Length: 229
Image (cartoon, rainbow, N blue to C red; front, side):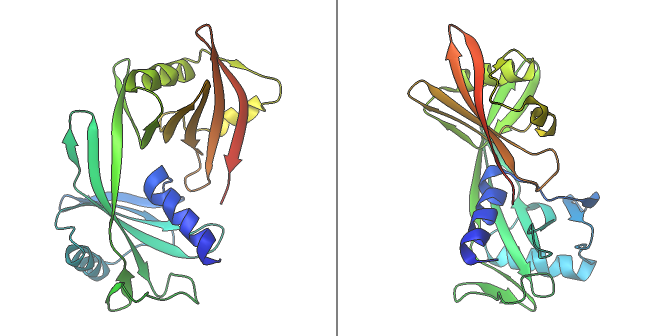
């Protein structure tokens, strides 16, 4: 896997919320949740190293440790998420991606600016910002609202969830069954065109971008693009 493709996948994992696939376990240990995929389960001693590395990178309060596959390869990575800070509708956390030599890509090692502890290394943490959307009595989260108001994003999400929309013939509606509708990733508006992105139901399997028009209050899905790692 070249560095450009690696960068794209990690961007998706951090900013677009693509979750790790093939979960083996999801438990809470001493208030730190762990969510490991099959073939990438950390031992207690390894967890201590990961927590130490996170602390050295500035994440003192860890909420979650998870592992994921770097599809389409067999490489596996580790992700640490800090305790969230919530203010009104805004949620902020820090995300640290950690590599373990035995799981990572064979020809990839720590960079000059990476911090290394044993066979684990990490760069600097990224900031994850989310916005809480309220539809009915349920809360949803999204990473990006661009070119539209919060209320517009909530209305579009409500229409998609009901569902209350029209699909143009060029769109393969059977693919909608693979969309995780409750995990909106982004809402964008440019001119009269809207774009809403959702992850695939199978974790780590990419995402779908819906191209939308609103005509006299009616929501029309006229295109759908899919990105698969």
